[in-house]
Image (cartoon, rainbow, N blue to C red):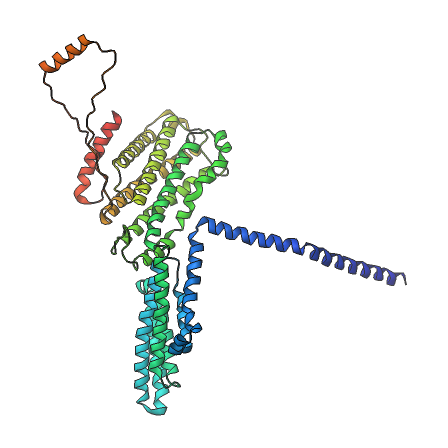
Length: 505
């Protein structure tokens, strides 16, 4: 009897506990809903703040769908197209993309694929109808099988998949739809005509709205992305030289909070797919602004690949900020100065190259000076490492390995930076970047001091009349720009020697 009472008490307590949990959940439910709504609103605000063009794009899509939906609202338009007007709405939903190039590419793919598939579908239906009631479905099925299998296989070709994959998909859909539905429908030509017309209307509305109202060009996005990636690498190298190489171990730990601002290079590591997509869309775009129709988009991809190679080396350098990574306990002053100079000069080179690309201007001659300076630092670093210095003789192997690894990474970064500069100059030539106009500076006579006496002025006039000395203008030869062309490699060697002499002086 006592055991039964105990079970009853436990069951009663469980019920009270369950009711209290439900009540507690219901009590906090409004607060959780409010917090969830606030979180979603904050995320939407951050997305709009990061790129206001996303908000504009949303408004443009809504406007396009509203315009094409008028085919359902107005009876005359509905009588012309009927239920097929829904294809215009579907076309806008599918075709309207963020950039003009993506919209134009998908629109042309859809229109051409629909036209070709509709024509072939009508032809296949006509040929199948000549075979009688028994042979017609067999022949239609054979045509669908052949065209669907062949189109699907062709989608595996890399170039076709990059630019025409959507077109082949629409071709399979439209051909199957027209040829199969023609077996039951009598007015197959009218069906294909309405479908093509509504798709053309939807695509035209999408293209006009996207290209006339705050357009976003894929080519410009690729252009700015490559320039921004180079500036991110330069920003990291600047921070690496200023925080790690110029600071002691204790100072590095105190400045670890600032290194987060130099981590933007990580987005460069996975930028290949985005750049390939932007280049593909840019090829569809017409000429606009400084971008011609046959703009060298492939050169941007080549330059982006070189930037990523440099980013991989920089990612290895980033490990030196990790407290778990073994770091050099003591830097020889010669190595510290050389590594700091390499890091800072490479940083200036990348940042200036990114600025030149962003402004579509020829690389300035100061970029060559930074490259020459960094290569001179590399030479001095190699000389010190190869020399039998007291540090190399007495240092342990575990102390030398981190320093040698750091030096090797910085030397590779200098080589990557030089290749990036060569590729940037090639891009400047192919894209016809504007050249900086060198303005002639006239010699301005110094103003006469107020305390000059009449005697001094007479003496000066006498000397100037006695000695007729013409002005001598000294022109300093500028460093020639780096180019990868074979015709200018010799000049580049001379430029390096001249630049080295100037720096030494």
